Length: 154
Length: 114
Image 1 (cartoon, rainbow over the protein chains, first blue to last red):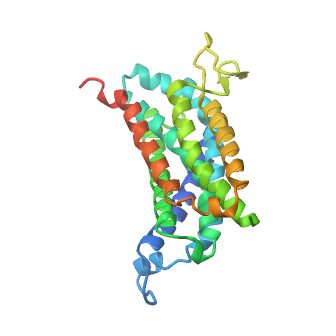
Image 2 (cartoon, chains in turn cyan, orange):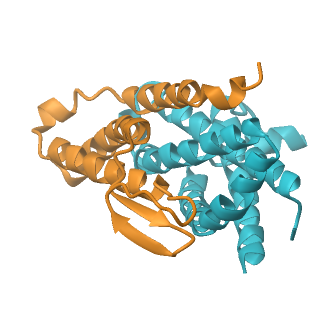
Image 3 (cartoon, rainbow over the protein chains, first blue to last red):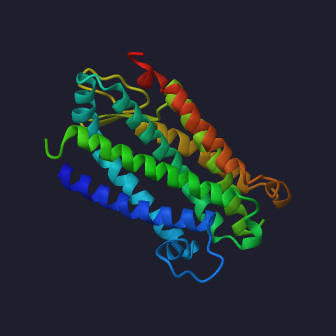
């Protein structure tokens, strides 16, 4: 059961990674004219349309992560301690704290992406999006690394 | 204040208070409840367990969410002339500082053996 949930957790994380990366690149490096290349089309997406999906995917990914977290705490963390891998445990600790901080940013992130353009003063919206992208990338890579250490199904 | 104005004030203050309270909760262990996975049991407050590890993460989130929701609700009740002064930059500066503080708080994981 845990393995199935872990796979769904990873698939949701991949979808989230794609959505938040699209939005971040598009908001920091927007296209000025009609895009013809792959990179141009990647940058040229409608950024606002991604925000609902990003909030939903983030919440679902975090929820699944919180369900499988006790299994990690009981079986994986102990193993990492026995293998004397403090860095692996440290990066996971950062993952859990960053994920929690990211959750708290979602309401204001959603409001900023749905507010009229005149109300989104300054670079707050773009920076907030980049921070969420950093959190998602960090959490994805750490989860991937730790899963590789433990080994699938072991 | 309009509904959108109240909602904006609530979410802005929520995003500022939550990371601060969350950091304090982790640092000082102010978990609202504890989960003991080996027993599958929850308990109020900070509990120690002789049956495997105790998990505080859920409790830290609950503590922080309650405090941030209270702060956000108070901000939503402010007159619009006051809530309009909330600088939106705080919603990324404070969380960013908290994330850096976590790196410092957890530094021993990365410095062991050096």
